[in-house]
Image (cartoon, rainbow over all chains, first blue to last red; front, side):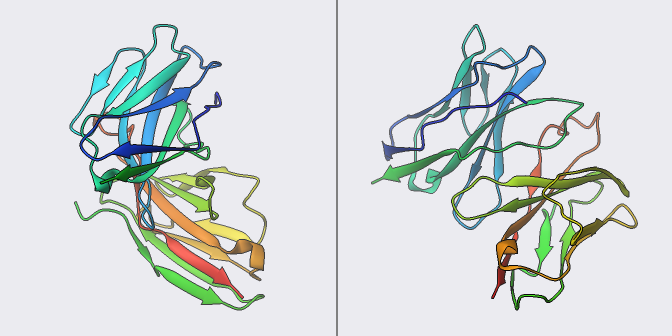
Length: 111
Length: 117
C-alpha cells in the first residue's frame, strides 16, 4: 500500500469547517482513499472513501485532487464530539483487505 | 445490527500467564480482523479470517499468538506466556460479504485493553 502523510495535530473551532489534509503521492491507480476516525477509548469508525471523484455523505466530504496525490477530508460544522484521531489510508479494494493505519491527525475541536 | 462486541473489555494479567479474548462480529459478516494498538500509535494488523479460514497473518503475530474462528462466526485470540510488551489494545473488526454494498467498510469493536504486569 502507498504511504500517507498527515499533520500530527490540528485545532478547530466548534461550528466551523475542519479541513484535514492527507498526502499520498505514490498512490496507484487502483488504490482508494479511506478515512477513519477514532474517538478516545473507542474502536476506529469508518467515515468515507473515494477513488477519484469527490464524495459526500452525512458525516463528511472527501476532496481528491485531480492527480490523486493528495486529498482533504472536510467536516462541515465541527462539534466537540468530532474530537478524535483521524486516519487517512490508501488500499486496493477487493484484493487487500487489511487496513494499514499511520499515526493519523489528532483533531481537537474547541468551544 | 448490534455491532461488533469484544470480551473482556479489560484484562490485567501477570507476565507468563495465558489470556484469551473473544470477538463477536456483526451477524453474517464473513470477514473478521484482529488489530493491535499501542499507546499513541495507529492500529496494526495482526490477522484476518474469511469465514473460518485464516487467510493472512502479520509478522507481528509471533508463535505465542493464535487466533481461531472455528465456525465462521465468533473468533478468539489467545496469547500464551504473556510479556509486558504485549500490553496493548486488541481490536476486532468485521466486514460484510462482497456484493452487499458495504463490504468496503470495516466495523470495529470497542477493543480489549490488556495490561501485563
